[in-house]
Length: 147
Length: 147
Length: 147
Image (cartoon, rainbow over all chains, first blue to last red; front, side, top):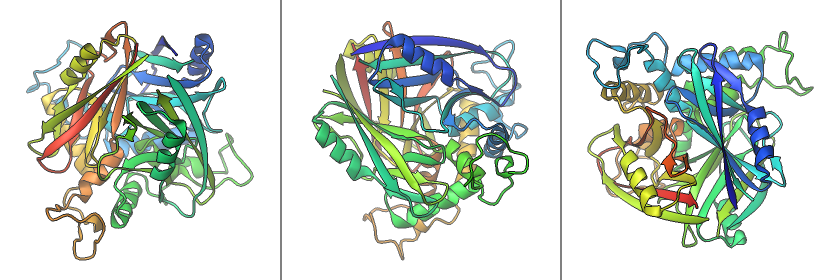
């Protein structure tokens, strides 16, 4: 039984952005040499999610609209009120309350089984890194566990 | 440390449908002989989810209404516009934008600890395969890892 | 490869309540002695969730509002109609349909990689136990797997 870890950097270009990272997951599994077990894909951010869904360009627009429905970008968020907020304030702080609240309904990671060397994605399943905040440098982890 | 994989087929009969698959999970763990570790229950579909909640018939109606609130079946989805869509189009393509968008807020898998031979579900926790699209043949995986 | 399990009890004081349990997760990893692998944090309840997000007091109010938007506490839930409901009825049954429906959009667990002895939380990531129902005794599990 072995554990292999990979750190992937990416630069998002808009928000929301659905970045298909399935190929990086497949590459990491190949490099690990692990053929039975599972892979954990993990976002290191509270305003960027990992989620499995279908890669169909029009659908990505629908999903963006669903996220906007769950937590609209232009609604009032106390997290965005920099006149009263004191915690975790940075010089380049941007209003991103919507991104945190959308993240709540998405999630930080996905775990996918690997059997006989094959990642068990269904026909239309692709792994997305979802930028919810604004374009920036991002980082996620791929951990392969098994033998 | 061992990994045991099981593939389960089921036929959904409506949508949304909450199929209680807890017994299949328990059977797979028993068959694996693994007593310490965890079990990953994984849907191979982008319009069918795995989720833990309570098996109470009236509550299932409430959860169906919540899903309808998150992404109404009859709203406009670009994914459903077959006059312009070109990607992943099949002969029997059905309009299912709502199912993908509801899936975003649910999820593809659940992982549950196993300790001393006992699946660690709380008193009211049951594992559901949730059909979001329309009645059809479906498939999910149960992976038990541990010793 | 080893598996170490920890059961944590807590008493929630309101709902929704976001209880930061990151220190308990870190303590459990330290006690396990496991330095490479991952940790599964698992709620044993259908009306209390585990979720990673930022610990910023004003944001917690925003997230509470998002949950209320997804499934309002005072909406009609068939699960709350004790005149017709027969399943899973207890003496002290409280109307909590909203808590179950909010839980659907959150989740039961989070899995986080551990590399070289370090839990791989990003800068602003904290692990929350989220009470959705009402103040009470609660229980969650921390399972560390690796070597």
